Amino acid sequence: MVEGFRFLPEYFSPAAQRALVVEILSILETNPLYRGAMPRTGKPLSVRNTNLGPLGWVSDIKGYRYQPTHPETGAAWTPIPKALLDLWAAVSDYPHPPQACLVNWYEADSRLGLHIDADETAKDAPVVSVSLGSRALFRLGGLERSSPTSSMRLASGDVVILGGQSRRAYHGVDRIYPDSSTLVPGGGRINLTLRRVTAPNPV
Ligand code: MD6
Ligand code: FE
Image (cartoon, rainbow, N blue to C red; front, side):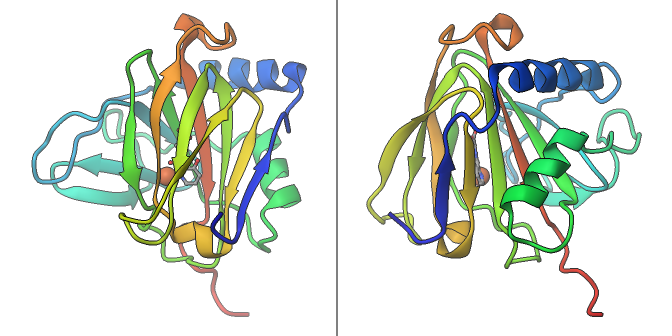
């Protein structure tokens, strides 16, 4: 297993999971999910997403980038909920707050191909991920696309941290197990990833 990977099963209690989902669903009313596209080809992404916080990760035909506003509404992204800021403070081992929380929404047939998270310039900060709703088959590899991979199921309330070497490891979601949870409407899955995007100013 690549160095710096951490798995915190059932970090959030069932009650805390429900509270987070209620908060996210309410946020989605004004900060809606939308469907991004692959750079160059414009092929629609399998997963719909939106963002929370000062910056949001956006993918469209022009490429991947972080921007301060929602690409469809033009509004600033909604702030990151306190429960997620508290999570970052507790587990990130990083002295500055996250700037972006990517909200990925999986339907029964959604997938996320093997990728590296490499659009952030704060390379020493981890990415902290929260799973809510249906279980997912998560695949973690190494620093090369051809590195051996291992798979694990991520369940509702689980937290995964990609820090250290694993911050640049390939990973993806091969499938979800729809209806393995009723927490997310439609039996879907929400994945939240907290990120520091820019390196903080030197003091
Ligand atoms: C997911 N997660 O669990 C996809 N990225 O739906 C990610 O792509 C991810 O879990 C960076 C760090 C942790 C992750
Ligand atoms: Fe990722």
